[in-house]
Length: 244
Length: 115
Image (cartoon, rainbow over all chains, first blue to last red; front, side, top):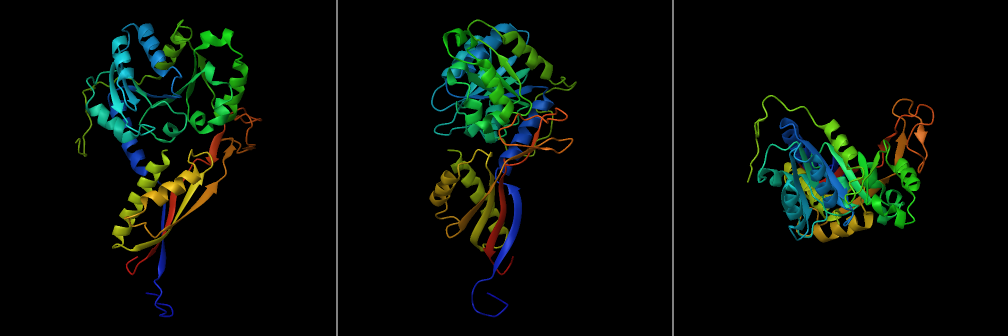
């Protein structure tokens, strides 16, 4: 009731919140990050359009690593286990996160997958996001690095068309570069586009088919691996939450 | 269509706030969305219309303030024009986004004796 004049109108009071709407996701992502860092695992959020070659790059990564690194992956997939099956066959311990109609992974889905994941001892853990250049960009999953796969068949202007995705990227993998001789694709143009949306623009040209650039990609990963902690038992930190 | 999941988080947050204030009626929500936040405002409005039924937000108006993206050099604070190469012209450092990617619940207007 309005106390000023007693008019009977309800009194409207502003409540200041000033908080990120996705703060619950942020908190879950921070928890995931603590898991990864506590275990000395380099977590990579791998994003890109459907068909950009995310799974193929990971298969090539496993071939190049040749057992030197223990690789793990979860693949966000709307309906199938095909990516995880391919990755398991290539030697990457892998599981699917079935998203149904959801167009992106969020930190809660990744957390759930981590607790059902068969291995806790990966050196590099790939979170292969749902194929989509829009939605996955705004959800922190707890990764150390965001990597975006962009294939040469998608065109040079994609960074300008999807700036939100590319501004969040720590690295862009330009995939399928073995096709460049057959296409009117201008590598300098994509580099220019990236420099306008991605402040610390970094791009590696790779081909899963020929293996070009895969050693450089593997070195990029190796340089970012955290030091393994002396006590790297799974779940070394204390948990306050329910793992239902 | 992550706008639906954003609206679900928004309504959750407002419900928590409303119950902390003893179930006050919610009149208006003020959110700010950066133009480089990756959120489609039309879709957000449609998602809000769809989801607010049977929630504390059923009679609430959603007002959205859009925020222009701005980039600046982290050391000399020189502003960069939109579409420019995102490196400072004078010192060469990578620019940082100072605004334009926010997805924020700023304020809730409630009708309540206990606010």
